[in-house]
Image 1 (spheres, rainbow, N blue to C red):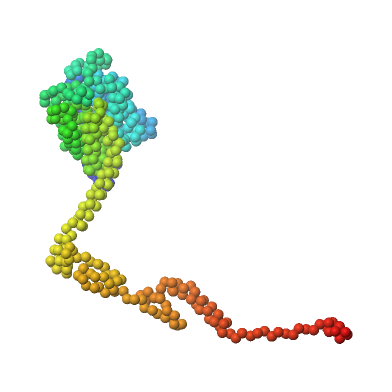
Image 2 (image 1 turned 90 degrees about the horizontal axis):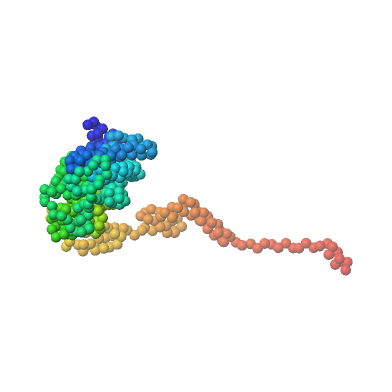
Length: 459
């Protein structure tokens, strides 16, 4: 491993990191390594399916993988992206879709389902960006549109032709009897672990699934938090609301029927849809477990795990945000408890050691000095430290307000603007004008008109 692969850029303490070469890493492992481990486990399940159903199981899974790769390449060309042949998530999606199908599924359905899965993958952004698990979306669509082809299974050990249509009789799976009738056939422990009951190609091999889950946990390719929390919540809900009287058998039957165990290991732990934080994974497992109990006991839908997982994928980002807020609230709560709890004991020890001089009934309260007299805790009067303002007069014996020996802001502003000086000049001029003796103007005599005088003399 190169130095660039050993260097990670961690963001907000999340488990998902970015390696030095730009590849995403989960639990210290690259996505490609995680999908490689899942592919090895899926191949082990495929071997068991071929041992039980013949080459028909191999051709179904091979068709799913081939169409997934071709559709991924085609959608990359249509969207202008570079196709990466090393992207193992495409192969894992095709394998998961094939192993969730019955041995009698037509090839046309698996071809359409694989193409739909890759279309969903590229619609939501392509590699490392999709929101919903592609295999889950495709299986949910096929089970709703063609339930007689997807949810009906042949008998155990029946030989299925590879390329010819199946001419035998199909029957409902174990989950259908459990959901619709509320009962299930009695099975021995060996039949349960060996998968001797009706179901899909790769979802009935309970022992192989358990071993695959343990191996993936040891390889750090599976989140034990999500898996164990989901199993615990689902088991608790089944224990409180069992389908029939035998509670232990009800928990086991409800877990192995359908595609719950298979989906919990391979679909719910898809690294591209998992929450990032540890608390977010706990919330994610709780959501999946509660929804599984709800769908199993309050609805009659078969293959309900895919619908549960699609809902959980849709709220995965919001679960991360809620987990981050929860962590912030917890930190603030612990900080407040640390600062508030034990304050009396802390103050008492400080007083006994001599760090504090006195201690009241509860604890000493330190009151800052105020502008007025106030009785302290020890009933002593604290004198006001602030003195009354000093009155200063100007040259005209007029009081000037000063604050702490300094001129007030208004007086300094007036002096700076020249308002006081102008006011004094105007006032002096007015007083001078008032004190000035008033003089009456001398009225000049009117000039006599010669014409008028001559007329009077003549007269």
